Figure 1 (tube, rainbow, N blue to C red):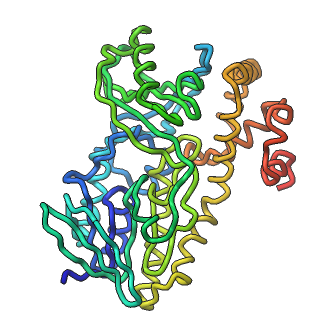
Figure 2: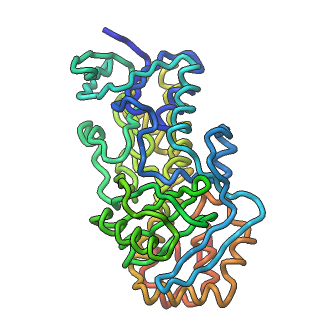
Figure 3: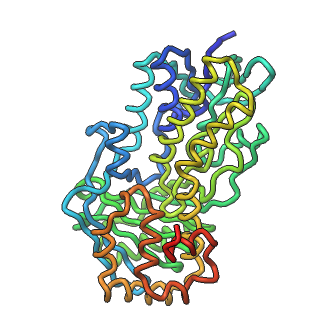
Length: 400
């Protein structure tokens, strides 16, 4: 039987980050990826903030473009432009980025098994056993602990008794040929993307990613958006291949158990405002690595011991995720007419310019930006007051 200290299901950024950090300190790590190619997550804009890029040393070869500005469109078609002198975010090649993370882990001696689907995970008092199918054959692997990093929609957490993510939207995205698009465009309208928003993100000269999130039928809404962009002369051809995915809005109810932790999109560790999961997933991967290192040192993989992982990541991200989730809910309560009114207030009072010069943390932390924006908006109490939870109300009133 093939034996490892740590078994990791999924070779996305979070899984590879855990693999790298644990292999680097000498543990035997096996990573199992169901796809033949690493970086198969195509329904992703690939936008990461500068803070993320710097903290995790993202290789420049993975960066397609810097993002210094964006146009934010109201349902009326009018827009607000936000801009800074230096890059606030980077648009990465997801295949190259994911592969670079995996190569780093492999260089630290982690072993990767591509085209290998984990069919069953069995956890006992003294080990974890996984059955892996590769080229039609099934092999069994044994480990001391398993890390589930299998992405959004994975059934593994539910099968292990950790529940499932119930709050999410569906995403659709494609790549298109463009005309004269040189900055990010974001569209806020429930007619275009009900329950979320849409985006046009240039990646190279003449190419862009177009996508949106929606409660249902995202492909149909994306086709309508493509037709609109085609008629406006922004894209060359709307006859493209659409890729689909899910965007978690709330984390898994529990991300640990006996001999198991869940990280990344599989745990719902993504931003409810934008759906971005790379940065938060990597942060949580580091928390998981630290806790697993301690558990491996003491040979203690109990649920009680691994609960520390969830305490750590919630201490870092819990309030942020709650604030962003309520911002998402507040937005969903607004009609397109009300969204237009808010855009007008923001534009007429230069609130967007004030926010750009405020001291909120960074592109990667939207919670403080949400609170700052609500404070500056003026009529927030009439617009949202009865919907705001107590901790947000106290923050707006300056009591915490």
